[in-house]
View: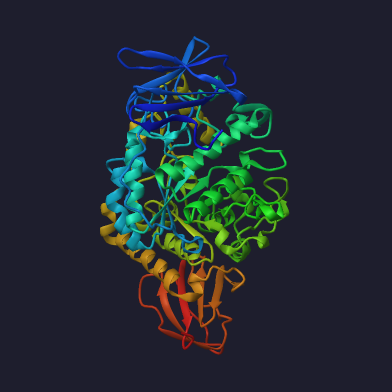
Amino acid sequence: MPDLELGAIWLGNGRVRFTVWAPRAREVEVHLHGEPPRFVALEPCPHGYYRMSIDGVQPGDRYTYRLDGVDEWPDPASRSQPDGVHSASAIVDPTFDWADGGWEGIPREALVIYELHVGTFSAAGSFDGVVPMLPSLRDLGVTAIELMPVAQFPGDRNWGYDGVDLYAPQTSYGGPDGLRRLVDACHAQGLAVLLDVVYNHLGPEGNYLAKYGYYFTDRYHTPWGDAVNVDGPWSDDVRRFFIENALHWVREYHIDGFRLDATDRIIDESAIHFLRSLSDAIHEEATRQDRHIWTIAESDANDVRYIVPAARNGYGLDAQWGDDLHHALHALLTGERDGYYSQFGSIAELAKAVRQVFVFDGVYSEYRQRTYGSSPDQGDASQFVVCSQNHDQVGNRAAGERLSHIVGHDAARLAAAIYLLSPYIPLMFMGEEYAEDAPFQYFTSHTDPALAEAVSRGRRAEFSRFGWQPEVPDPQDPATFERSKLDHSLSERGEHAAMLDLYRDLLRLRRERPALACLDKRRQDVVELEGDVLLVRRWTDGDEVAMVYNLSAESRSPLLPLPPGEWKVLLGTADGPQPELITAPASARLTIAPRSAVVLAREGVI
């Protein structure tokens, strides 16, 4: 079967080719919901496929598949669900007047990722609503936006991880053409677009895949129920469904890469892991198009195999999450020690995370009660993504508080300096760059009343076990969604504007100073000093920069073990005047305010 045949493919001139994988059915008909309605039997093909090219069909026409003359369901590879996840699919004409000819994408070493949720990023809550903010993101120093999942989900409000129509951009966001307009506008601003895709499970409402084929297996259990079947009987065609999905986003929407959700929950015991097959297919497409297309694994397994090349029996992905830096930083700044934060809380763990990303690199974890992780030495610095907050770390708190809400602006500024000036790929969560006041809370709009009540009740029960004091917002209440919308006008006022200026300065330093632009964890020295102070020195040919981070709640005046020379202060995160020059080694002592950072550069190097 040729690539990209799944679904209803518009051929032009009133002709559409329908292809569906339905091995559970003995016969499949496409029901065309026109006037008059038509039922057309599809021709059976090997391995449980059915297909047929049909005339007299136009873009926008609705259709469903009828299985064995009885039940009708939306297309598993539907390109559009204009009336919701339970209704008919719609024919889509993929023709679009793209203006991004010659676009080559963004090199991995230049990625500065900005994660956003389309529904809450703007007042419009749409793809088009993102577009006016793109110039300001570019000017900030962002080089790629990462869209939280946009595959069709039930209702109008959702984080996106309940998607069930994986080929169809969410209708309430603007559907197929809305997404194309956004991607084209991003490329015009020099911004890449990464898409968060969920290949480890589907949402609980509107998931009709099992009606058609053997997409799931009870041989493995996941937090969402039966696992996706990527290594059992019929799994070749399940793998094809998801791999074609990724290629679909690349070819029809010009997507520049993927954040692959919870890859450690994709259970695959076969000789060639699904992730390796996916990576190979995407990289082949990148070569064919002669542009950068990236695959980035979200995982808390600390398993370097995700990024080890396939030739060395790895999965061959381009990058992966490095959550330990976030955990170490969060535990130090907040004092929280619940759950996985119980593993962190000392300056030594933060130093190790800055030094090599993984704190748990094959050592014993009391929290997990086992040894976990592997050495990250086989991965380059540019293969790890780090942050001080993201949608999970904010939204999975009971009240959705951001880091600046918990620790204040001073500590949030320090956190920004630590991860933005690290040798890893930084990821910002929308609004953190100006200390957004709105929380980011968990919201849904399930249309099944029983499911909606179960989700609301489950959310309350989940946090009551942790003893969290804030009242847990009801995910189904529209007010929960509205509270989570950003107010970009804050960025023009007071401390919010000052935070934005700091982020802009930090990203400028990262971009313009050769020592910071060189993503090489071997060209850095990380030293723990007394009083919860961390000294990070980074260098490259002709440039040397040092960052002094005071994680304590008191001022410190450490003697800095710096190479001899005069060191000029480039930036300080605390309010007030900064020293202009210090001399090493004899008098390299610097007084640094509580919860603040100072950045220095050795004079005469560049």
